[in-house]
Each structure stands twice: as C-alpha cells, then as structure tokens.
Amino acid sequence: MTEYSEKHKPKSDNQTVAEPLPSEPSIKVTVNNNPNVDPATLWLIDDDAALRMVLADTFEDAGLTVISFTQAQAAWGRLNDILQETESVTQLPDVILTDIRMPMMDGLSFSDWVHQHFPKLPIVIMTAHSDLTSAINSYQTGAFEYLPKPFDLDDAVATIYKAINYQPNLVIESKATKSDTSEAKITADTTADIKTKPDNKSKPINEANTVSKVSKKPKLKADVKVDTSTNDNPSGIIGQSQAMQTVFRAIGRLAHSPITVLITGESGTGKELVASALHQHSPRHQQPFIALNMAAIPHDLIESELFGHAKGAFTGATTTRPGRFEQADGGTLFLDEIGDMPFSTQTRLLRVLANGEFYRVGGQQPIKVNVRIIAATHQNLEELVKQGKFREDLFYRLNVIRLPLPPLRTRREDIPALATYFMKRAAEQMDTAPKQLHPMAVQIMQSFEWRGNVRQLENVCLWLTVMATGDTVMAEDLPPELLENIPSNLEPHLEQDLYSEDTNSQNHIPQSQLTSNTTSWQQALAVWATQSLQTGETDILQTATPEFERVLLTAALNHSGGKKIAAANLLGWGRNTLTRKLQQLDITASEVQRNLE
Image (cartoon, rainbow, N blue to C red; front, side):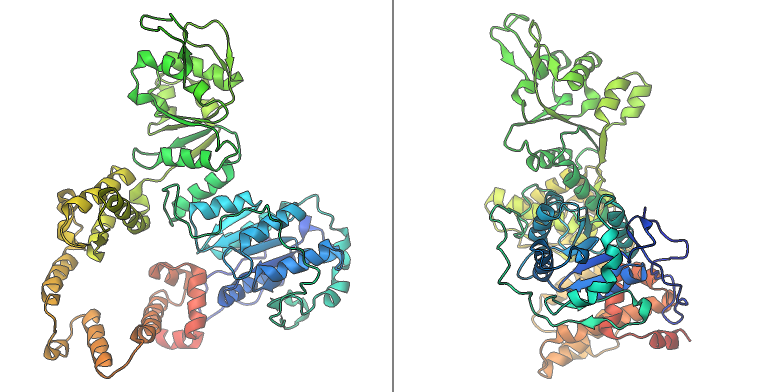
C-alpha cells in the first residue's frame, strides 16, 4: 500500500521565496511499496508547458518517475506500440494524468481508448473546463478521478498516490528490470519532455516534438462516443466553485449506479435538476423520469398517486389506474420533499424499497417494478426520526448515498455565470435581446444573501428582463430587496459608479481633469491609458496586464512575508497559478527579498 512518507512533505508554499526549505532525502514511491521495483511511473499529458513543468517537478519531488507529453496522440502511440508488442510491457506507466482539451486527440477519447485496452491502468483527468458535462464524461470513459483546475498540488499528489494504490492486481515483477531497458525504449517517438527522478543527478531529456510513427497506428474505434464540444449546459447546473465541483464528481460517480440517492439542501438549490442529471446520464435515460412532490399532494391521495388503485377501490374509482411506480418502471422515480410523506405511506414505501413489490390501493395481486429511487428534502430527517415523524428504517433505506447541495450564499463566485445564464434564458422566453449586467450590479448581487437560492436568482433575472430599461442593467435597476441591505463597503463604490455614469455620458473627458492630482489607482491608470492612446500606442492591454499582475503579486508576497500559499490566497489564485505567474513574469526570490528588506 502506498502511503505518505513521514519524511516527505509535498511542496508547500508556506516556505518563503527568499529562503527555500533545505533539500530533503529523495524518496521512492512504488506500487504496493515493493522495495525491489523501480519508482512508480506517471505519464503527464498537457499542452500547457508552464503547468506541465510545475506538475512534473511536483510529482518528481513526491517520489515518482515522470514522463511528460505535450499531446495525447504521442502517449497513445506509445501505448499502441506496447499493445502491438513492438515495445515491452515494462514501459507501461503506473498512472496517467491528462488534460481534456488538447490538439489532435482530446483527453476523453484517449481515456476511453485506454480503458478499453488497458482496463486496470488508472487515469486521472484534469481540466480547466470544470462543468458537469466534463465531470460525467470523465467518469464515463473510465477515469479513476477528475481534477478541476485550479487544484491544490498536495491534493493532486494525494490523488495520484491513491491511483497507484488502486491497482493491486497489476503484474509488477517485470518492472524490476525497467531501468535496464527504459533508456533503449524511450525514443524520439515521444512528444515533449521525458523526465526521470533525479536520483543519478541526470538532467531532463528534451525530446523532439514529433508524433510517434503512424504507419502501425489503427484509427480510434468508431464507437467511441464522447461529447467534447463546448458545453451548452443541457442540465442547467452551473458552477465553478469547489462546492459545485464536489457535486459534479458525485453525479459523475453515481450516474451509472442503480443505488438509491438522498439529495439534501435548502429550497431552491436545484435538487430536481440534480436528480434529472443523475437520470439523464444513467443507463435508464431512455426510460421515464417521474417527479413527484410529496408536499403538493393531499395526504389521503398520496398512496393512490404512488401505487395506483384498482377499479372500485373507493368512491369515484371507476377504472383501474396505474400509479407513479408503474409509470416509472425501468426508469427513475424522484420523490421530492420526502420528509412530508405521511407516516402510513412510509411503511408501504419501505416494502417497495426492500423487494420492489407493492399492491395497488384495493388491489389483490402484487406488482413488481424495477425503479431507481431518488429522494430529496430540505428538512433534517434525523431530527424527524427523533421526533417520531419519520420511520428510522426508511431513513436508512433512503440514506444509502447522501448528496448535499450548497446554498447559493456559500458559492458567491458562481453568481455571475448563473445570472448571465438566467438573463439569456429570460430573454429567450420574452423573445428579446439579452441584457447585460453592469459590474456594480453583479457585485451587489454577489453580496446578497439569496435565502431563496438559485430559484430566487432566476426570478430576479426574469424581473430585470421585464422591468429594467436599456440594454445594460445598472445597480439602480435592481429590485428593492437587493438595494435595501447593500454592504457598507460597496456604498462608496456605488456612489462613485453612479457619478462616473453621469460623467461618462459626455463624449470627452478634459485632459486637465485627467492630469490633475490623482487620488486613486484607477485615475492613474486612466491617465496612463489616455496618454498612451494619444501617442499612438496599440495593444495597451497586453502591455498593462503583466505589469498590473506584477505589482499585485509583488505586493501580496511582501505582505505575506514571501509565503506563496498565503500570497495566493490574498490574490484569490490557486497555488499552481501563482507559481506559473512567478515564472512567466520572471519574479525572482532575490527581488522579493529586496522588497522585504
């Protein structure tokens, strides 16, 4: 079993840039911790050179042998050579980490092909396009894990360790001789950089950027069907936050399972959307998806609604009527607000969950169905069990896998994307052009508590589409409830924004006003931009952006005393993003040290 060594501490940005931690004894990570084999090998596939370098260094320091590729096509060629027995099986990696969107061959098609021909070889997929479709497609192609960017480097190392430990049945005896043959086998067929653990102080080998021989490469199977197109969000579930990435992973893992799922969360968080996504990406997707809200049905009609009734079962039952369970046979039955189900009906539901059988109301013959149950509630079922309002045995039957959904106020970074989506959808409903949200309006929306969650945001966007004038929704156009409790830190910006809108209605800002004493960095930036344009400069954004990032990055490092992880948190970046920016902007440790002194 592969475990973290007590001596090994993955790269941490808590160390200062100026005073790096002393080098530690090199470690060796192997499959099953077998001391007689070479270090475990990771194939790293990404077309981003800077990120590839950061990841390769990180995994080498974590005790792995890293072979890097700029595109999946080259890695596929190496694996195909092994499959055709033109290369030794000892060249197989122990784990593969690949990006999704790359030229020539995308990571999902590559993962699907690998899963078909090397089913025990674990693949971890990473992508900056961290939407629900990418997560589900990753797991459907047989991926071991899905890493949305930006991710923490320590988390990535832990995931790779788990993937290596995931393969206890792989034949590893022959890998003891890998070092004797690897040098001969690694040729210019590989695209990109091939790096080995620097135990022998060797330098990385830079390979030619050529695609491995194509004469022996069969085409990918025609039946590989992976959607890698731009996501048009058919599910309506949007989110880049870490909380939503957890939800996406859960949906990806649970979609192909018939297991019962209990979705919890406040009203308006999208429980039915998640239930529908679980069904649409499951093997039952061509069968019915039946949704039933327990709180919307009178208690004396719930049993008839769920199980149907026989003719003459009660007054008015003139014909036999199938219930929702029969209608959902072969598909999925979504029971929303399960906490409002009457106690007597809970007993009958328990029997269906136990053996798939039930009787219609007034019926004499048992009916057997094959239905996947997905339940949802905004209530605390454990508390209802303690109060005697919900059966404990039914709770444990439903609570096989619990999927909690985060409230909107805990994922405020998703609000701009959600608002844009809802504004477009509202415009389609009203048959008008979509309106744009002013940045200040977006900030106010992000500061709002949204007790009604995503559903409340959707209603606000519909209201704005109808009531706001003009093509741009300004802060003052927002509904009164959003303007009543504006945080104090936004009020000065709102006043300044309203003032700037008035002044910007003029076509010209006098030069004397621009060159007067500036009181903010925005005004100083405006002076620079105006003067640059007046002197005939172009591409000023490309000139300003690196300098802007350099100033903020240096200030954050100075404030944090040179600690990169703290600086990344101050900037709102991931740690690997900060590391990449340091390299791109050529900010050195000595430069930061001088600023600290």
